[in-house]
Image (cartoon, helix red, strand yellow):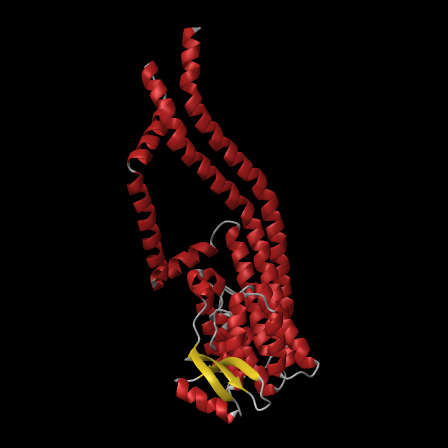
Length: 401
């Protein structure tokens, strides 16, 4: 358990901090070995704010990039790891990041390595991050590995940001369109249907359909909400099953326009992560297995695992990748060149940069093309809705004239 303590140092000054121990007695013994006289030792309570708002426990990429880059600079300048972490703790503002750094510093002071200390916090430090740090500790190149990690995190964040930016506009428009339709169905259409009934005028088929839908939503809204909840639960269960995951991920890759964008994104992430692991000294097979776990698509995960199995049997990486249609010839060729020249990490970096530029170009094209398409779809939908509502009134006015 994690315990907070207040003690007196050998210089007579009060000292506070955290210690990892089985109980209070073990913590007291540990403090005395460090020439500290314990005054109070209490169990550290988890932040109530973090428990109340789980969203705060998610790592912010900006915080992680700042932490990684600053730690690299401090280690390069000659500071010890503990001193660098303590300085960074004073500079961080995120609640969760502060708690994580507290725990990491305590673990290191207790004799743990930096990699094992951060591995306890997968919400902040991914398994690949911890693996790279572990390899760097063994090779004595921790500062350089941290610098490459920071660069990798920045590129990863930029790639995801560009994709989210492209999808933000259509998502907002579609959400607003659905909201307008729901408001019309609940508040506007019922009033108009009462008017039509009082006037006793014949209604065209589209108007009858819309009024029927409105009455169904108003009367059976619990059933509608229940159906939506049930559908989402069944979908999640289906997506978690092996067969369901295969079907969904295969469908995603075959989406018109978006499928190609997703494939290019996966390839960029694969090349960058694999190159980073290889460049920091991780064994090729281990690097492939770790990269497979972050692919985000079961088909690419299986393909990368198959490549690792072939490499383990003595097949070159390029030849192993060429057996799968999921890896384009360009990527295979760059990997082969990297193997022949002994600069596999550089070749993979070039491949990731190529796929990232392809993603950027597709995002720009997609954003430009989607705006008029969305406007046309939105206009047609609104026009049909308005026409269905206005047509009976227009027919009534025409008959009176």
